[in-house]
Length: 350
Ligand SMILES: [Zn+2]
Image (tube, helix red, strand yellow):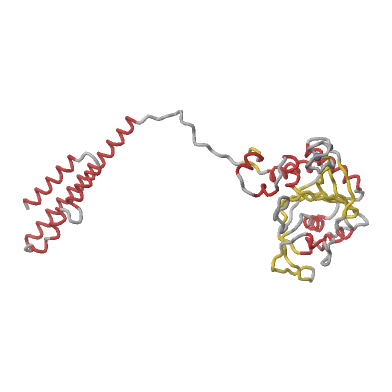
């Protein structure tokens, strides 16, 4: 019993004399560890007479608890002292620059689409959208590109293995290759007169400097009782001049698209050399920007519109193409590379 008292007192003394947490821990191991001096007594209890055993166990446990409590108290005291010392000696340097906070920017595709929506809203067009997963009917057939038409091959289409039942026929599902599917859905839903633009993602299995498997188009269609080719020219003139922020000169070249009659490619005077001829325009002074034309009567019929009563024009333009021309971006793939450097340079502040 005396031995236990002595052990306890020497442990408490060592605790009081400890000057750091490490020393304190050594004391804990010495007395209360697995083979510690106090812990060992508890292991010998079995050898004692039963009446003795009870008092020795009680005294040892009391000693153990007292030492444990003293260690905890001393530990708290040492930690507080260490903190106070740190606070007293450490100085806060308010001249340190703050951690930089990188705010994102708006992607050229996003702000070009918004810019075009604003221009077309002033011309009375509203914004429409349709599904990116479409069936062959809405992506091709309704746009006057029947099954055997070679234009279907030109589109490098991503097909699904799924089919869906449509108009009593099995239609293969696909990722739309053009935003023109929106024309048909809008005609069927709203009828004529109609004036919409349809910005959105389109997909083609194609990838190089000027092609990416996914890109963006804006499709436009205007239908009414007396719409002529002059209206198309007028709308494109206003749209392209406002977008390029200058009075751009347009050139119309006859072209073939299954969904228009007549169809036209539209070029603008080169924005880089102002028509003098440069590398970008291949010395021609003009750059191709979009395709357009008067809506084919078969397309109107597919949309449920009576072509004897209504006609109109449509056009389609690549969003990235417009962004590249206006902002001097020379690789289409950069739009989708997720490079922060690209966004720092070409992105717009929020
Ligand atoms: Zn040029």
